[in-house]
Image: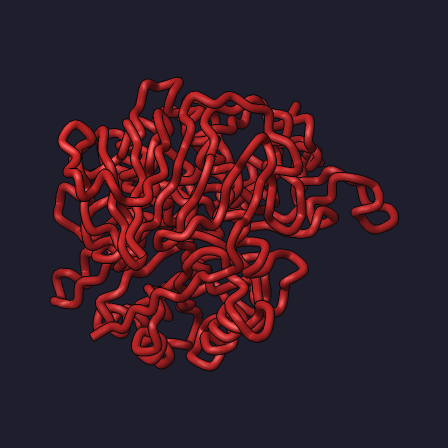
Amino acid sequence: MVHALRSRRVITPRGEQDATVVIEDGIITAIHPNAHLESRISNLPTDDLGSLALLPGLIDVHTHINEPGRTEWEGFATATRAAAAGGFTTLIDMPLNCLPETTNVAALELKREAAATGGPNGTSQCMVDYAFWGGAVDNNQRDLEPLASAGVAGFKSFLIYPGCDGFTAIDKQNLIRALPHIARTGLPLLVHAELDPSINAAVAHLNRTNADWTKYETYLASRPDEAELDAIEMLLELNREARDQGRPFHLHIVHLSTALALPLIAAAKHEGLPVTAETCPHFLHLTAETIQQNPNGPTLCKSAPAIRSAANRELLWAALIDGTLDLIATDHSPCPPHMKRMHPAHVQPGQQPGRFDLAWGGIPSLSTALSILWTECTRRELTLSQLAQWTSAAPAHLAGLSTRIGSIEPGKHANLVAFDPDAIFTLTEDMLHYRHKISPYLGETLRGQVSSTWLRGHRVFTRTNNVDEFPTPPQGREHQLFSS
């Protein structure tokens, strides 16, 4: 089938264009300026989007889907519906919070089967495409190369307890043992970069002084900047040693929260180390100064690492603009409402509700990220082209998918988003399509709204007259990446 989408604002790698995008069998075959349309193109079935912007489908390289094993937190069906509604057309699933964790090929196959056959009559239950990260944990170095051969996009590690017992933090010695295996695969290593000593010392001090764990300032003090700084310094040194020994590996720092680490990353890039880093919508929108007054419940804003000051937020935005930070990922980490410990019914007898030390640290955001980010972009006079670089092109490159997706160009999958950058709306529960309808952003007035999402040329989401619809059955499939 050949059809086309026309927009006065097509966001391409060469800038914003008034153009028509031609699609054949799910692939972009041509982009024609509307001022010079050929007659044979003008006769194609065409959706005219008018002034709606046409963006490349967003790619989230940091999604916790949790299936199999914890589907009551989130599953492929609900996560991918939320993704489609939020303009995401590809998710890269994290290897933890599911059971079993994706630390060997057998576990990968269970996750692969759940995604591909969990829908009606054994069909895909995914509204958008997906891929998987493998886990690098203590003593699984012999599983890493088989995982790469089986098609994972790379490896995720924690340097600190991740919140679930089955996915172990990796200490420095085990990481050193794993690095040659990772280097041989050519795949990136994604690291949650916090170390225990400064956190343990901070928590001990807070408990000795009877700090109030219902206050965000207490939680923020328990996750000091030093925890990230110490971890990043260690990782960069290992990265440097590996390069000097002829075994370089791509280091990617996930969900960077502290701006104090930006000079370290900038210096590493200037040195030529293979290092990239991401930050997240919550670090770019929320601020420590306002969390205690969040009307939806302060603990809904708990993440690890922690959301920091407004001044810190501005430095993160500046680092995206100057290239120190490479991309934005959601770190969509949902949980059942009771795990946020907001109300008396959510805690054990005798426990105090609203305690940050008891609440799950994660913020669901697949349905909301694009609007949250565009709201902030407009305040800083940033462009849709910049946003597409951070949310589509750079994530595609990290995941090894840039030959297929990540931009509007001939030869790429027709994964596209019609986006109204001028829409102003109030976020309500019916707009949240993930499993549990909780969000720190409910009730906020946001700018920019997804109108439609196409996966390989098929419309998988549309918003018409304030009603969200998913017009086609799930047809998402896996991007498999096989290392050499």
